[in-house]
Image (cartoon, helix red, strand yellow):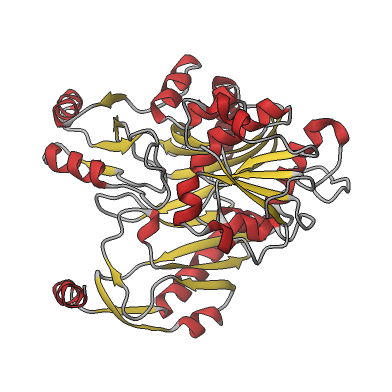
Length: 443
């Protein structure tokens, strides 16, 4: 797979999930996957894309060199028939924008992509247009963090990396928490399997912790205009690490909150000068109504939210994204060369995902998966651990044990269906100490 003559679509950053979906939408040999040389080797990308007929090339290039992204097009030759460039992962957002700009096809815009990849730059952009946000500051060590804490007084606060994903290293803290320990936890949270060795080091910021319903907005944007809009309700596990435990679509917010979120999304698009693509923006509704920006990604959301949107609304959000990026190029056609209808639509039912977890330890048994799969409204059950797997505390999205996806007449019923099905799945673990001893004995 090293020719590019048939390439029309380029994915910046390897995602087996998106490639599997693209395989149903694109012709054979039409997709090029661009990623870091060491990531291609480490993740065996050449081998893993072999079953997908749409993949025509795997190209090694410095996709995570965000500071030098303008030079990426000097390394990756422009496919003659290229029509769409999109990010496959968070760490491909800037690369996709850079290639799209250099090749004259629609995209986020390089400045917008860089802003969205840096939470502190996003905060500054929000300040310029008056977006409601928590109090915040960049911190460079435990002493900085302590000064921010002391300035807040008795209020709770958050420590997070400015350029990571999946809640990695994010912690909810209070006045009595040890700042040195919190800093160590944040710094030790790494993604060596997904990040190139030279890639920009993590930076950190502290923020005032806000309280209220947590939602995300998924907006499909064409030339700065929102053409599809969804609100997702988010459930977060209790404790220090605010990892999502579930999502439901469409969120049951008040008409006032809905209007406010639409207004604030327009402000966010203006603040970042985002052009075309998908925004996945997370908000807290202070007082149940006023959206305060938490963060925003310039890519399709993870956590199964795209599947929930498709189940709830009908249609195919990824295909719609391809259409938006393609039609801005001037030919008015969709991903298979056919015209597509308007993208504005209403949800027809509810959809939800519930993530599975277990007590830390070595997995001794997994039971109830078939029963959960046959439960009312359930569309899929996925368990990512097996007998013998050692599981720890859930500290990021990567450490969850699986998921249940279900639908219902509305989002509330879909959530109930996921919870009933998830309760049927039993992941039995040995005590953590026994698991650790067993691991030591087999190393």
